[in-house]
Length: 162
Image 1: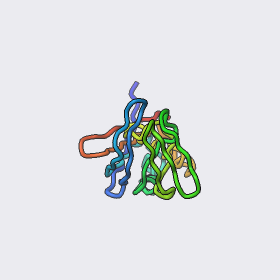
Image 2: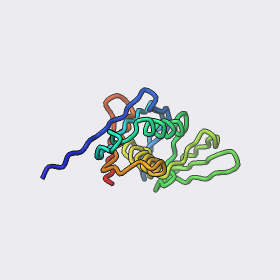
Image 3: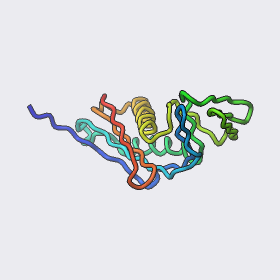
Image 4: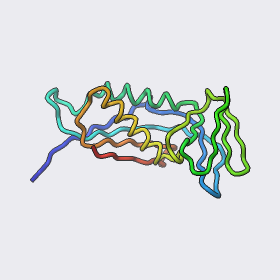
């Protein structure tokens, strides 16, 4: 039996963010560096009575806000298995083995992920997007896909089924 559905795709010039990060796991740490990330969104679902799957305006507004929250920050994975993170007054201290970092608090975004890889960033953004779409009363959706590109030709797409 056939099951028809739609996939809508959102990618805009403003769905981007520039951020610094490093990947770290026991025994390995990249140098602190940055990327100009681009974000794309795919939403799967049925055609609603209004003639579309989801209002593009709502998706763009939420996605833009999520990108702005990461833009021009150092992304630190708060759930890391090898970083020790301490917040004191206006600073965030990060320790990896023998390396110590001190960042101004306003320059850091602590993310509820283990690594700041594009895979985990895509998963994080998909969860935040889903949460905010739910709060806006958008649904039902069969699946959400979020793609994060860290440089041309290097990206990950995370898909969450509803």
